Length: 142
Length: 178
Image (cartoon, rainbow over all chains, first blue to last red; front, top):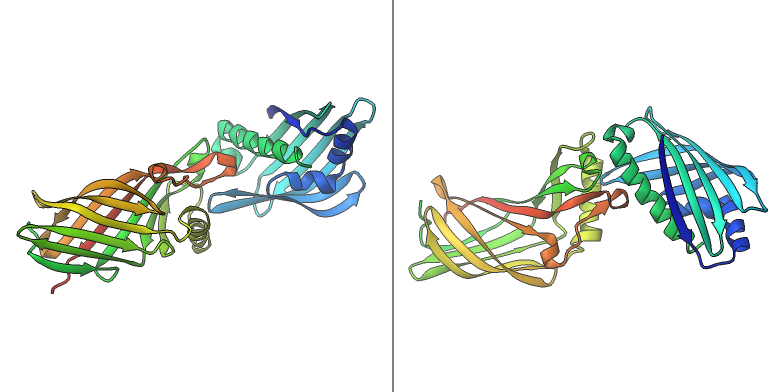
């Protein structure tokens, strides 16, 4: 299990940010290489992410769901469950959002197996950290 | 072995111009060391009593990946084509590649060449040896940092996998019989 903490800033009111992160149609494309395959409910979607590793790429496909939502405290947990397309690995994560004025904090707990994990935990942490930092920058423009 | 005096024109039919790249970053083990061939280039070499000259131009859109080693999985034709596309779109962008000598001196086994290398509009001095072997074989190479020419080394995986800044460019050719 890899756990990472990040912050993001949008410069927009909390209510706006709250609506934005709960809107999977806006949230999922903020992940580089991520896209919605199908909306299955107001709080869930089938999605996939293509991660380019130089010349090669890996695609993970699965579900993204808002599993906890505290409207008063502006806290939510988004659960991601995915499998590597054409491979044996999987990538699961619980992403906890806690909004503050003008932005928020993200706590990510991820479990990654298969080819991606075979590069070692240090590499997985670096790549995940890079992915989430990129995500927080896109969140700033959501 | 000394190079016989004369004027020579060289191109892909006479040898290979090769770029070798390494890898860097936290996820370096996922990437490949690449051997990339420049498939369209032209060089001229003049050797005479009073010195000589060397010039080379290459087509920045003619780089083809020949092999990759040390990465995750093997590079197939699709991956090689993808890398060539990235070189065209993100790195060289069809820019200028040109070398012109400012001094060519005889050296043990060949020539010592100094001159200016123009990469994508930035010109800097470089120096290298051209070694003359049996049967008119001519070899030489230089190592330089892409960033010294203002080129940002290609990166992927959110910056954790990069092409190493230093690259090696080598020529291995056979002097055509005039």
